[in-house]
Amino acid sequence: DKRRDYFPALPYETVEVCFNNFNIYGNMQNHHPGFVTYDFEQETPKPLWKKFLTEADKANALPVEVDVPLQPRLKPAKVAKMTKDLKEELEDNIRMYRQRKGLDAFFEATDAEKLDQWIGHFEEVRRTDPEFFEKSMFSYTAKNGEEFEYAWPKPVPVQQDPKEADGGYKKGQEKKWVAQQKAFEKFCDALDTFPVKKDMRF
Image (cartoon, rainbow, N blue to C red; front, top):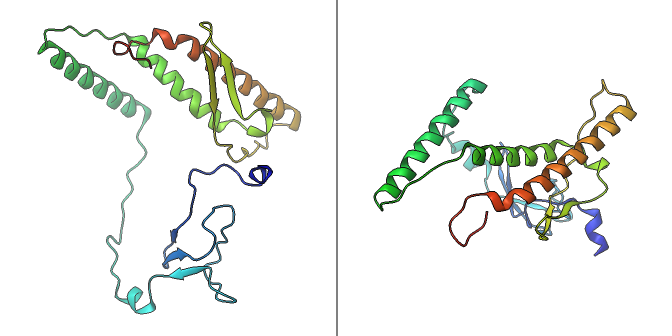
């Protein structure tokens, strides 16, 4: 369908309701996100959005919380400690559960590292400019012959760093895509080494 080329990939299929700090609005137009117009005040020839709250409703409304305090951003050292504590607690619970069944439990540090690398791969893909990758997905045939594909919603192009020249920016983004393709291939080849339940696969 050529019409799909006109619409970016979105994480939802319909838009039924929107809200802001003034009102709650029900969609009275086409539900497809690609056709929605966000003019909440249009009344003629027909309203595009139905306002759920009247002026009287808003006058009588009381805020749930007037002041919402925001906690400072956690420092990397704090995040690392919380991650370590959570991991140790989880491993202890698994050990106790298996001990009650007369089973042992062993953990390899490389398993968590592999998952961290995979999550980092996802994050890096989302931060890399899609305008400099000719495909819409990664595809790879693993060493065991298995076919893999990884597609993602096309993100909004990344804003270029003004400190970088046009040529340098383009080359830098292309190198990032090559690196992420290799990371994807490496992970696919390592899937068989992930310890999982019998007859199951990561």
